[in-house]
Amino acid sequence: MLKGKHIVLGITGGIAAYKSVTLLRLLVKKGAEVQVVITPAGKEFITPVTLSALSGKPVICDFFTANTGQWNSHVDIGLWADAMVIAPATACTIAKMANGVADNMLVTTYLSAKAPVFVAPAMDLDMMAHPSTRRNIDTLRSYGNHIIEPVEGELASHLVGKGRMEEPERIVEILDNFFSTPQPLKGKKILVTAGPTYERIDPVRFIGNFSTGKMGYAIADEAARMGAEVTVVSGPVSIKPDEASVKVIRVESARQMCDQCTALFPDSDIAIMCAAVADYAPAEPHTSKIKREKSEVPVITLVKNPDIAATLGQAKHSGQIVVGFALETDNERENALDKLARKNLDMIVLNSLRDHNAGFGTDTNKITIITADGSDTDFPLKSKPEVAKDILNAITAL
Image (cartoon, rainbow, N blue to C red; front, side, top):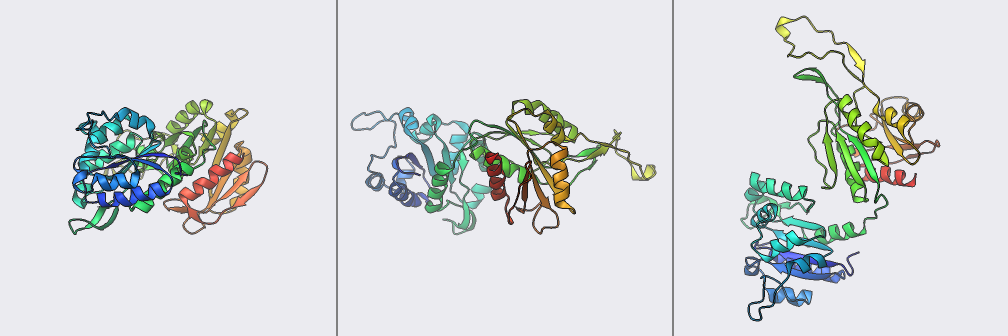
């Protein structure tokens, strides 16, 4: 899929620049047209002559060519590119990119780029772990850049840790996958719920569950990669989406989640109800902390929370799809079929806590997809990103 693609390869001043030669060679071998933009420090590690010989193009470093005065337009380069890859990306260049410090041709080109940008950090482990570097990388990710995380191994300092630039072969694979990913959901608006809800007993205690949000966020990320405009209404979790285009609305309780979903659903094409929503909440949460020493054992009266999936299922109009989840411990299929019909869903995803490595807190899941016409498909144990693809492929088929 890289054949004929215009790739800007940015090279900065780190020892990992030697890997950029291999990366360039592999990109050209795949049929890509590559324009190298290198920082002045980068030329201290690898010569423009080598890079030019491999790319077949003059290497750009400065805003103009000293002996002829020819101007190198960062705007034209940015518009020409189908993708920009900065490998290696040093801590200094990452900081400049995150804060818009356009003092060299590479960062100026980055600021003008309209195409996707892939950043492959490379630095010593202490620099990689420093809060300022982590903040700058998070900032770049929030801008929509694709971060190719460094790997662990022996570094130039001879220390061992995270900071080695990802191998060129893997970077090419990431680019190839990016351009080859089909986008059957392009133009669709998808609402995803994820994580648990917390129902307050008092200011420091709550009723909740063990959901981590991994399944919901995997669905959101994959839907975004398939071209959808995705909004996640998320309960309290520690994770973030990998895809910068995914919008996250954070809530705490089931009622808050319901309010957000009912507001967003009229403009959504698909709603995927993956959150583990608490069925009940304390009727009268205490406004101050319940003190063990000063009170009898409290009696907590519960009231039903709104059924978000059923609410959306009853409100949907022609053309909208609502997908539910059923996490069961017994009578799995019967309970799932009951939910499917009762909540007026188009599809339900069933998984059982009796299956090893499925359900809450795991990186894998084992599901059965049941549609409103009664058909069902069993899937083997897979990683949650792979399960997300299965779910979204089934939705696409609907």
